[in-house]
Length: 202
Image 1 (cartoon, rainbow, N blue to C red):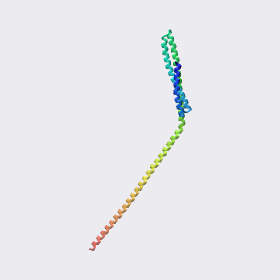
Image 2: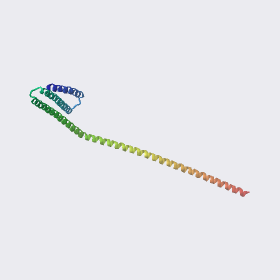
Image 3: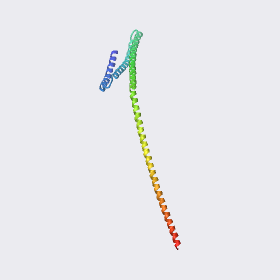
Image 4: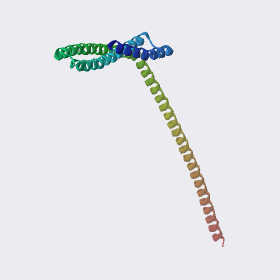
């Protein structure tokens, strides 16, 4: 019975591993390291599945033996033997589970170290990218500031030209007004002089 359950578990693991291997072969992007990790994680998972199956099988066999021991003459001796066998089975199951977990921890530790190594290797490139982006941002900001300054300068120049034009127009208007006022004053004086001459002749 034990051999049959282990062979079933092994068959299930093989069936599960086949699609993963096919998928990795199709993608063609898996590195040797990643393949090794996947293989070892699959093995760890298989060990843990086998451990669980062994525990369940051991428990069923122990219960069955306890029932059989009730029919025997030396019941206690039979049950002690059944317990010893069950303890061996659970000990083996725990060993398999611990081995699977240790393998899983080892792979995760390697993956973490690999990720840290890649981050460290990529750090100079990321730093260069960040500096380039900062330089581009600074250049863009400088261009924007120069454009804003040029617009301000242009507005100030146009405002100064407008003010100059207004001042020139105001000056022309003032001169015209003065010329007009001078003409009016001259005509008035001429009219007064004529009036005064006309009054003397009478």
